Image 1 (cartoon, helix red, strand yellow):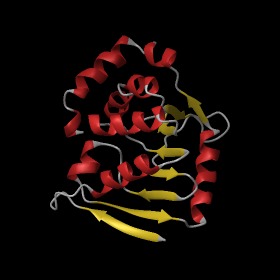
Image 2 (tube, rainbow, N blue to C red):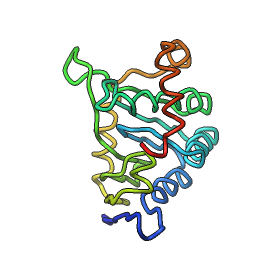
Image 3 (cartoon, helix red, strand yellow):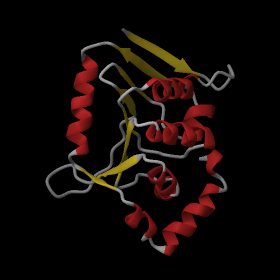
Image 4 (cartoon, one colour):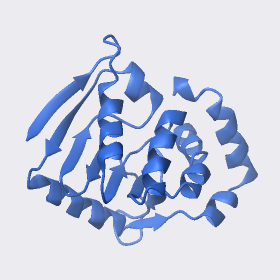
Length: 186
C-alpha cells in the first residue's frame, strides 16, 4: 500500500504526528528516523524513549552541518535526554569521502514493513502549524530500498555519545537552553 496524506493546521487533527506515534507504538524491532530538525514536545520524547526502553532499536540521523544554526543548537538540547533513554543519535558527517554534510531527508522506517516520507519535520511548526504532506508506505517492497538507503547514510554518520553531548561548549549549551524557551515558535 502507498497512502498519501496531508496535514492542516485548521482541522485540529495532527495527522503527521499521529502517524509518527503509530509507527513508534507498533514497532517490534526497529524505528529508523531521518530529520533535519529535532524540536520535540514531552509527548514525542516519551514515545521515543518508551520505544527504546522497550527494546526497540530507535536511531535518529541528524545533520552535522546546520542550515539554521539556531535550530541545530536547540536540537542538541534533546540529545542527552534521548541518549539516556536509549535512543541512538547520529550526525551525518560526510557527503564525499572527507566533507561534512547537511541532510534534509524526513522519514520514519520500521520493521521492513512501514515507511513514511514527506515534508513533515520533527518540530512544533511542522507538526502543528504548517500545511504538510506525506506518504505512508505499508508492506511494499520499496520499504526495503528505503531501509538500504538509511543504512548507507548511517555508514556516513558519527554516533553521538553522552561524553560528546556533555563536552559541548558552554556557549552551545546556554544558547540551546535559551532557545528552548521559545521552541514552540521554531
